[in-house]
Image (cartoon, rainbow over all chains, first blue to last red):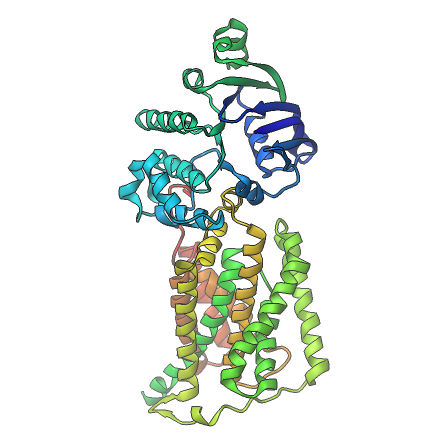
Length: 229
Length: 282
């Protein structure tokens, strides 16, 4: 579904990714792990076209999207939830969902479908998104990605800085979406969540892929060493 | 006392003109952060459009289109390449405004021209002349239209989304380039409408926009960036302050008073009257 080959990118002259390759099959959940600053967010931003790739290719559904703009990738079915429970703060919760649905040229019923996945947002529809708690904003961010009718979800640390009760809800939602056949590329810091969710994992270190494997391999001592701070 | 009352419609209509100009700036400056010094030239372009067309009601949409298209060309050709460099944008737009002023001088001559007000705007109700009343009505209509556009239409929602979080907008499927283009078109078009309004209260010259543009920027800054209600209050306040300060002293001292008041105000409220507040931004 998504295949990344030899991807390089960075900020100005500072290179962050040195030839990253990974593969997400249809309906597969791949978890990208690694310590802070190894290039996880840079990888996702480059996959989405927020940062330009200086080398390598990103292919989605057999189509080379390396040079496409972010909004074009979204319209092809790549749903992105960036880091830090972002929203459009002055718009209402409904406004946030509406503007995304309209931009992705989806009918209004996609909003109801997204609200089925995140029922906690239902009573908050008229509230200003900027006034929600971090956990609520994260649920909104994921609902917003769903409204674009993605065939693949790209999630950047959806549980970071979120209160534990909502982490469980978010984890359950990811699991449900994955079970419904959605491919997921997930960056996750919590090892236990990654263990429960991931089909396969990719460990980054210093802008390189240093390990790939299935969830069971995450138990190995060497893998834990790569993830320890 | 009657002189004091007579000054009121003058102050209010100056406020209305400032508001119309500030509405346009709300788009290009408030929303996009571009200090568009060419905005003054778009006002001038709107005023000359009114001069060429002659009919006030026809001139309004025509001036909107003319100024809007000029803004569109400026944004596509130059400004969009400089979004990360605000100072370069400022210089560039200022240069463009000088070119446009000279162009107006070549096309229409350096002396001011007069746009005759339509007969149906002659007279007035008591101390309220119809022409000034018309400007105020135009400003109110402008505010309502901008408010409705931003909050009630899909395009307006997209504009707001891009302003509030540009990168998130792009990764939510919004074509930010197109939104920028449209925002600039509308902001510049509103400058053209303001230009038509200006012809009702004074002569039209190549440097017409420069008279108002600084005050209009003050309105946007004092009102709070991108804040509609702030712009309304600041425009009316500045218009009244301007005309009364001029009435009690003289034109140059009035400017000093206005600037002093604004500086004092911004010392107390550096963000302007209204500020965007949310968890995300704080």
